[in-house]
Length: 449
Image (cartoon, rainbow, N blue to C red; front, side, top):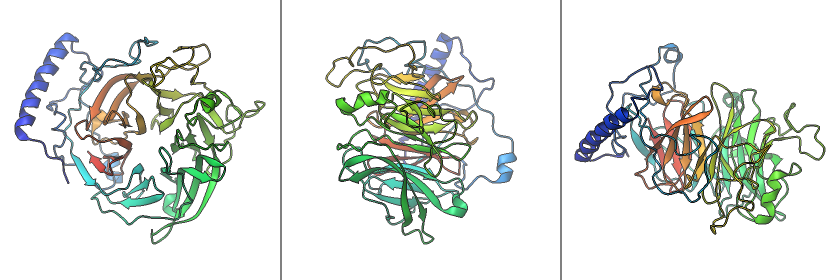
């Protein structure tokens, strides 16, 4: 079903937004980021359901070659975050937190395709345009872009579905059209405890199950709790996998994020068979796992590779405050639990109370209070030109999707989408039709575009 706004409310909010844009433009000296202007009228949050002429078909070669619409000028507004922070920490540089707000001017539609999913965790596009969605309890669904939902697909090993565990991320293999292979992350359940694992399986020809599931990598060691598994995976341009993990939450495990002899709180780089990628930064380092790419992470539930630069970006859950957006450098130490812009849930500082230390990377951006960031994607389609190469992150506790405009490795503007829906957004991905698709803990699948 399509979310319908109230027409009177739309007109009122539209007028207010026009006035605010005029006032802010005068105050900011008509700040510009793009060299192009737009004649579009900025929609209100509830008005972001306006239908467009976008089709729900895969982009054809002719469409790819056709000139793309010109991106309108970026509107800069006051920061979207107005609540007081949880800490008194100061950012390391201007714009590291509470960047200017912005507003999408291109009309787009927001449609709920289904609300019958069972605790969905990840959504990814198949080459034919359909969507594959994991469900936390250990099943998978295939959904058309019109909302037709398959039966639950099984064939997975036992997962630890308590709390933050379960069947987690999914990514079609680059050669899926011929191999029908899918890659997954999951909280593997064993008598020794649980851990984040990467597995792969073939989608059966009749799509009733996955076949010959095998684990290709494990985030050792096992540990008996149900928290901070991460975990996302993404194929790079060479067909290798980046995988993220968490440090398992407990005080006695979090310090292992700083050690190179384990897989807690890490970004790893493996081949499609689960082996370390040649050239990884810690190959040859005594005592270090050769698959490690970066370390010092808390709980990484967002991962995306920039479509132009190939850079690896992650979103990372902080404690109370201090959620992070990080640009990942090979061999980088991202500080947890030595440095953080957050505090303990009790209100006490993280031991040491440091936000910076020599040899440790700073986040590109952080949120205080938290976004509770989960899955994320860069937008590549030209159908909404002002979104191109913007980053979209699902927010859990914050209950919205964050749109980040990034230039030269810095966040220059932030917008909140679907904040009126009251949903915990678990993942967001781009479809073959150029729309965004998002799943929520409440079982919904949204089409945005």
